[in-house]
Image (cartoon, rainbow, N blue to C red; front, side, top):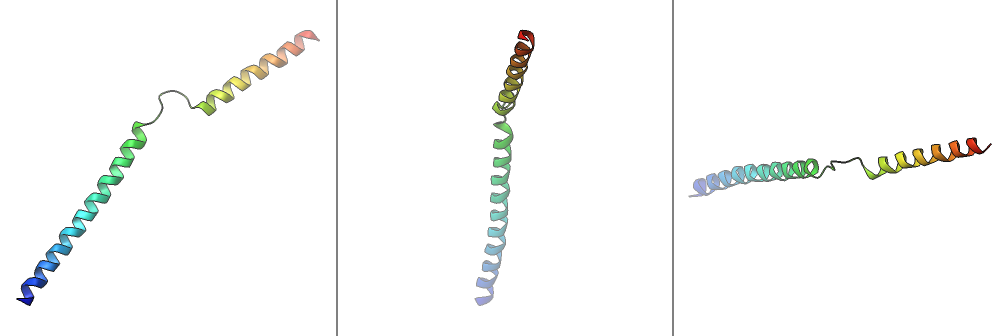
Length: 68
């Protein structure tokens, strides 16, 4: 009887290890999909702000040059 209960405990341990591994892999896959899925299709706000800042700076200095 003890032998049988030991073997069931062994099988249960093996099954739970496989289950835990599958759950971890599933969660990791979900996070990876969510990360790539939520990527913006347009340039980031930071890039856009730097581009606009550059354009306005060039316009400002070219206007100063023209007035001199």
